[in-house]
Amino acid sequence: MDKKDMKLTIGHLYPDLLNLYGDRGNIACMMKRCAWRGIEARTVEFNTGDEIDFQDLDIVLLGGGSDREQRIVCKNLLAIQEKFKEYVEDNGVVIAVCGGYQLLGKYYKTEEGTIEGLDLVDIYTEQGEGRLIDNIVLESSVCDMPVVGFENHGGRTFINDNTPFGRVLYGAGNDGESGYEGVIYKNVIGTYLHGPLLPKNPEICDWLIQRALERRYGCAELESLDDSREKAANEYIYNRFVKQ
Ligand code: GLN
Image 1 (cartoon, rainbow, N blue to C red):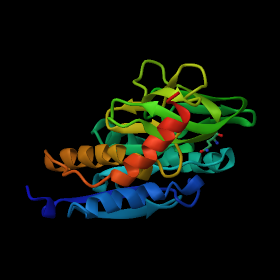
Image 2: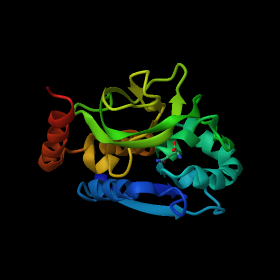
Image 3: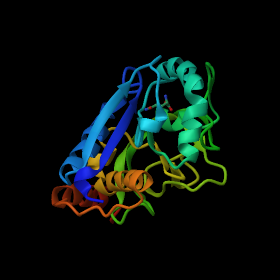
Image 4: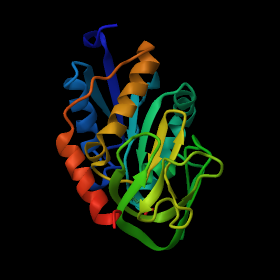
């Protein structure tokens, strides 16, 4: 199938509440990397209370939020849980960041009570002593380049027997102790890496696009783009925090 005939729909869930640190930049990155390849992409925003038809969606972004915002969003999530679960089990692509990552799991236990999660992935989160705030660098099976980002979370996430998104080379990761960060389940990536995760790590962006095209159209060869600037920025961070 010609790339020109391929269309992708990105669903941005709850940008009215889950929008910390410019998670929206991840949408801009997916849109741009599709456009550069002649793949038609559109983004549909769903605010709390909106009906969501997951059959129309190819990639879902769930951003980060404060505990307070997560508590508000939680009520809406339970209404869409069943359809969202079907989407995930049908290999729907999801990128969930920080607060959104925590909400993929069974629950997030805080001092002010327990926030029920979507239970899409068998993980759970508990608030720990102090916040884990720092730059972070990972190695991940999803990409050749190291994954670079920033984390800021009070919750500690436990992923049971699931596959982590990456191994921590610098930073805290899921719980500050396991040495692992995030989770991968089917075509879902959950991660604590905030804000411009995809612009900083274009291979992850392409992984999401590729998986979405394969699911919708059966196959997809993504042509490579000139990522020399992204690679230089990535190398700078790697050298600064990891390389001795
Ligand atoms: N409220 C969650 C925590 O503090 C997630 C924060 C975030 O999305 N940055 O752990």
